[in-house]
Amino acid sequence: MKSRVIGLAFAALVTAAPAQAAWPERPIRVVVPFAAGGSSDQMGRVFTRAIDENKLLPQPVNIFNVTGHYSVGSRQIKDATGDGYSYLLIHIALMGGEASGVMDFGYRDFKAVAATGDFCLTPVVRTDSPFQSLKELLEAARKAPDTISFGVNIAAINHMAALLMQQTTPGAAFRYVQVGGGAENFRALIGGHTQAGVLSGAEFVSFRGDGRIRALGYTGPMRHPALPEIPSLKELGYDVEFCVANWWFAPKSTPQATVDAFADALEKAQRTDYVQRELANRLFAPIFKRGAELDRDLDTTWKRIEPIAKMATKK
Image (cartoon, rainbow, N blue to C red; front, side):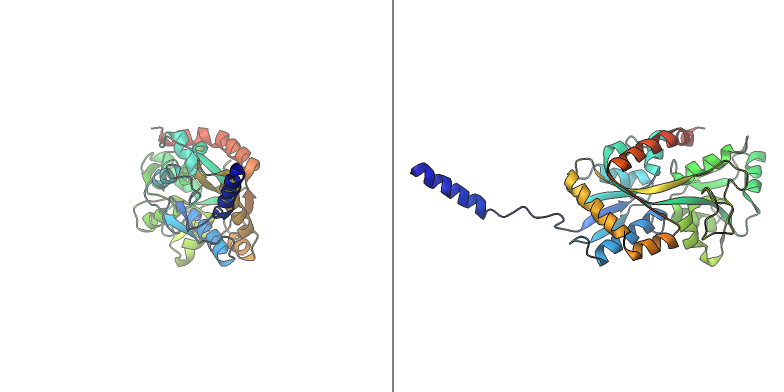
């Protein structure tokens, strides 16, 4: 009889215990390791706005820009507690940093959440630049190697795109200047600190309004319908095609159920009319990958990008 009373008392305690609170209980932080205004920043703000306005999660999702080299913000999330409240939004720069030796960690040190918004790039100069075409820019870099200042984020997409273009003209060599992401490159270019740079299609559309920059080409497989006046590099005779996706990552120790819940919110956000419209306006292709498909895509991308990124630190 005594044991039965104890058992009933224990059962009552278990029943009375509060259920574990559902994630998320507090605001979620997404680190974009670039300045505000760049392609990843634009992507993040579009998705977080859709999540908040459509109440896809019971707590807000906030973007935090960490400037300087992208390794700084990336490391913050790698080393963060895997409690479901810290995420990283980045692109192929994460692989570039690892392959080039700029960083001692890479995509395998995170838990992949989703891939959103594939985008291509545009090499750019100031409107008053003496280089009227990509051919003229490359020829100048061939005739006077290491004299044309080219703004980059070392081992990031703008650097890798510049290296791919440079390879098309034997003897050409730009003088690479560590500047940062798209927003910082735009400022360096119009400020006269650099002579050329690379922006994403979204960044070019965002920054071209005042007429101070001019595109020399587009790294997509063909002209983009929203930029019909800009020829693809292939159309110009250069065997260069370079487009990348934005990746959302969580710290490695984040529970898979939480990762899946955040991926669900991102996927629902992508289906909203607002996100579809914004992706189109910003020249992002509306891709969405998660789970095993995303893991395979990351491994495939690594094999493709590793040899390119290794060139980033070669003298």
